[in-house]
Image 1 (cartoon, each protein chain N blue to C red):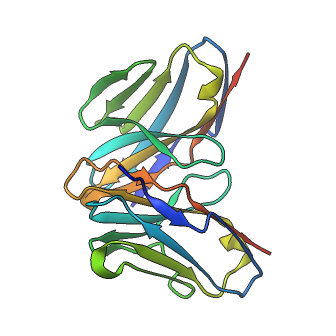
Image 2: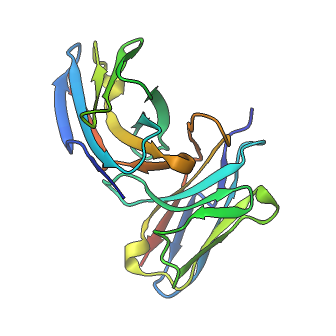
Image 3: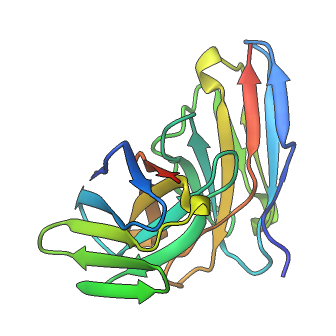
Amino acid sequence: EAGVAQSPRYKIIEKRQSVAFWCNPISGHATLYWYQQILGQGPKLLIQFQNNGVVDDSQLPKDRFSAERLKGVDSTLKIQPAKLEDSAVYLCASSLAGGFGELFFGEGSRLTVL
Amino acid sequence: GQNIDQPTEMTATEGAIVQINCTYQTSGFNGLFWYQQHAGEAPTFLSYNVLDGLEEKGRFSSFLSRSKGYSYLLLKELQMKDSASYLCAVEAAGNKLTFGGGTRVLVKP
């Protein structure tokens, strides 16, 4: 079974530039999550999708971050414009809807903002 | 909202036992997870507790007390490869999973 795919693995940009991350969840997983993990901290939920609808985006900085999950499969997370404090690993995870909730994580996209 | 607390760092000797505590306050509780995360890698699932008591899985065990808002992860017969961060995460309604800050465990020879 293929795992959660993410790209790019690494990205370096300057502040005020924009960046986009892509995620393809495990086939059949209805729930998709984007987490932000700053070095030395636990993952922080940015947004949660159930199929193509948003379940929770309360911690998403909506003035600069946006995410979509068209057709209820893969998803993109965009940051525009980036700030220095956005330097982090962006983890995508998926889970079965109605299951006990175990999340399967991708390898993450490491963003460095200079 | 949810609040999850766990120690920042612990050090133990190879072959020993380490217990990582996690306390939580949450509105709505569906279960508690422990994940392991090696440096530079994604978190991987270790255990899941939904009822009070101890769940044992090989060298790792996890305990939950819902009335106390408390869990621990017990790592026995520590190996060098167990050096990693251990993340406590609480699941609320809607499969929403909130993570604690993680406990970095350093295993010394």
